[in-house]
Length: 169
Image 1 (cartoon, one colour):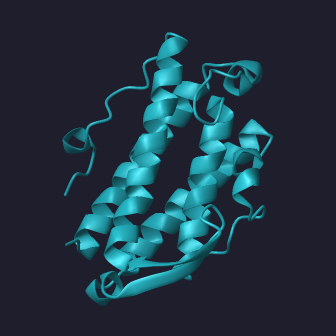
Image 2 (cartoon, rainbow, N blue to C red; image 1 turned 60 degrees about the horizontal axis):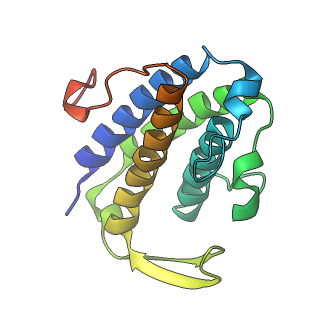
Image 3 (cartoon, one colour; image 1 turned 30 degrees about the vertical axis):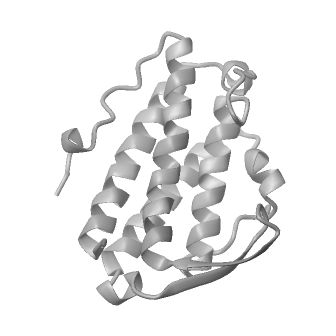
């Protein structure tokens, strides 16, 4: 279904896109980033917090990182109130994800992952390959929401297509 090569490609794509989105967000004031834009998580800032929170949560379930400082889903949009702290942690954690995928072996895609889901309120078990794909799909989904909010401010974050990433292989 997927391979370590797929994960490495997606990790590099993720870093490239996060850098692009955060650069575009630098054109906004803090108030604009935190303005409720009627998106799923309200603001750009809240959405970017949620993406980082989810990355930390998922990697902790694979024992590749510590869980987020605020482990409840209800706190996922307030992980970092300060823009510079959020941006720094995003950059740091993108390196964590890339390092993790660089060490990933094919056997890591096999079998199931079992975890307690706060959003479902129960223990869940799903194939690891499915969850690994979800980690990157989740980011892409919510970055799309951020891109739409940036467009609403008249800001173009740039190309988002995987084949145009700096290192698509």
